[in-house]
Length: 232
Image 1 (tube, rainbow, N blue to C red):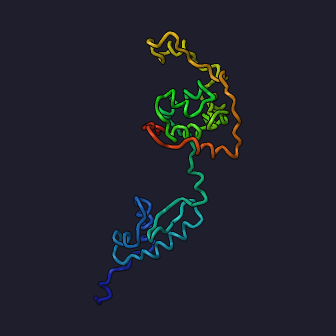
Image 2: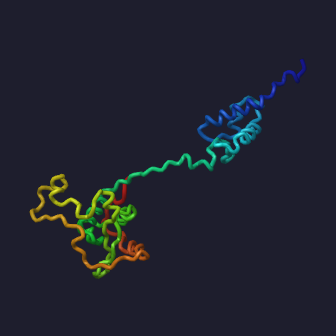
Image 3: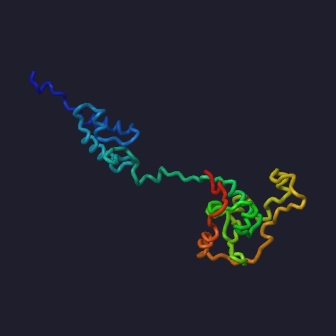
């Protein structure tokens, strides 16, 4: 027997390709050529197996891709839309945002200073930003008083969200008491304001100047809410 007869036969290329395919399929992440070679018999032509697999999967729903000198199977880019799921993610308002929304609903049109006076705490920018972003609140206009403060009111989206035909359908004091939302110790002369009845003169806000008002009248400073914004 000659020395040549003792040389191990080179691994079958087709079998090497099968094994590389199995390793890439089962791997949790991309594998380098060295990663693959360590799991294959000595002498396996990993580069050839990769090239053959890349050609075999070209144009198919799953393709072989190189990422940072590592290889992986992935969905063909043009089919990514099939894996997209659209769903609505509900956003929970913070307590500060809920209180602010209730004040606006019952006292509108209302300025930021008036909101703070009712709550007893200075509102930070985040609270009104969230309500404006969710389109539950809108900037109505500028009050015809010194400083020309912006006034806020609810939107049609607010009515739709809470299933109200109009603002007059908001619960009054009797309904709130029966639902346990008002303390029984409140003064006898306590009244729940009727939304929209008091309408001090105001000038409407033009669309092109609304952002400027937003920034002018939502400055931070002083005592502010610690729980403004929306939670997950």
